[in-house]
Figure 1 (cartoon, rainbow, N blue to C red):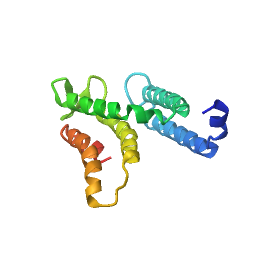
Figure 2 (figure 1 turned 90 degrees about the horizontal axis):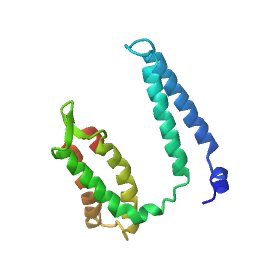
Figure 3 (figure 1 turned 180 degrees about the horizontal axis):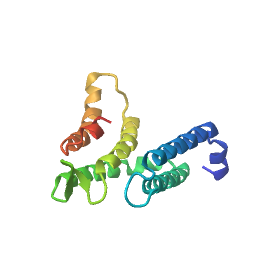
Figure 4 (figure 1 turned 60 degrees about the horizontal axis):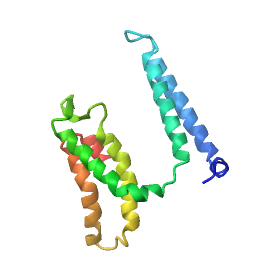
Length: 161
């Protein structure tokens, strides 16, 4: 898809709403944390601004992403997802606050949510129909395996999402 077509098809009202929500969120972070913690008075605000900039950058990159590519890498992503979730339960996983949900410096369960949305969409697209109860067994197993691995951490909140 060309750059001009992407810019032409942008939903500008959505961009305005997202911008306003970001500004309100940054204002709330600033007002609730400014000068209340040791160290730099704007530490949490700067940290949040960094996250906003990274998120906006990722969103900009995704504007040019061709979603049809995910069809070709769907099974690889699903397998990678399962491997990461299994590694969390191995000795490589790190326990924080009673939950063994960290692998090095990130939580695979958070990445798993995005991977499952992408791969499950591809899975359902390739299914011919979901008309009978038996047709739902495959999707339940497909989503059930990573969900059980997330529950085993234990991370019920992410598993429910």
